[in-house]
Image 1: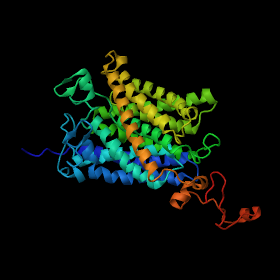
Image 2: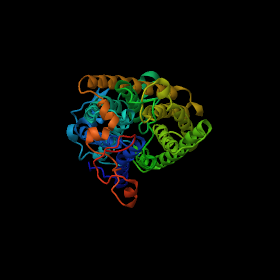
Image 3: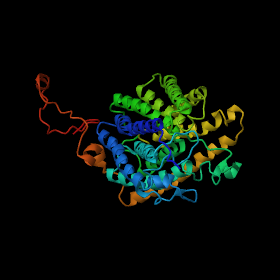
Image 4: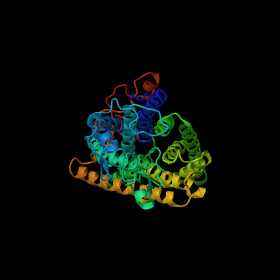
Length: 456
């Protein structure tokens, strides 16, 4: 039999989409999170994204892809990490999944695409523990968590495991299967459970284990550079088209629908957040616009291939308003989720996953198709919460007892950039000139300002 011919359009499409998702982490997420921190913490915040990329990228090639998408299922929880260890037996395989209607693509293209998903999921968690944790502990946690939480859940949802459409999965056990496929197929088109619920729950657990920043609830901890936040949000939105449309694995009609749904849901979420701010606070803020954008992107991610554009607008509007209120939960409940990973990613991820069961045009409750899809969506969301919560708690407490999470109070007060990286983001020391001389300002770099937001 002749070898199948590579579909160059689908292959090129997926390579571009993988590159866009990589752009989401660095520089997109790094800028978004970095701008939201204080000036004395921005480098560390950005380094947490870069560090996650370094650790996860290596582990994904070694055994992560095999654990997620390998051919040997182990109890519906993971695939055998040794089947494709080091990506063996993948270089010449074309379209190994055999999906009807998809172009033939090299398996390595799919590997690269999925690698970027693993990277950004880990990086998202870092926003919940900004300003206060050891960089070394973060790197070790990144490797352990992606191994014990992300890879298993990716297999369970996308790789034929317990939360997938397989005949041995949870949905098939509840509502039956036909020809080896669950009669009610769980909907997670691009990562509502695998990425956002997973990252959001991990962020919540770590925020509780690590504890609050010095001065949390007593002093203002405002974003130090709002333009960076806006630029980061724009890059995330741009890259997210690779995230969502690329999950179709081919440049076809569904990918086009996903592109439109991603756009309108995000627009609606931004407006929903700004409306809440205007009526509640009297002002529509730039940070609110950027956060609303992310809330909409998160919410539409699991549902983008199942909804109509009108349904996507509704889903996004609810997500924006919901998350605008949810970010205040950390003050009500007393946990320090520094950059609102819980209020945005966990809440919007839950809403998007459950909302898919309500608004799916083919199986959704609001379209007259009964409650089964909604039940399945709720169950896969709860299962992801439980698995991630238990794994993260175990890792978090183990690292707290061994390496320790927190930097010293003096280091946190002075700025984590200096203590962890021996660097500062901004040189704020005057260098001389007529204005500096007239004001009597120093022209050396020996002084060390200690005011909030200043650099060494």
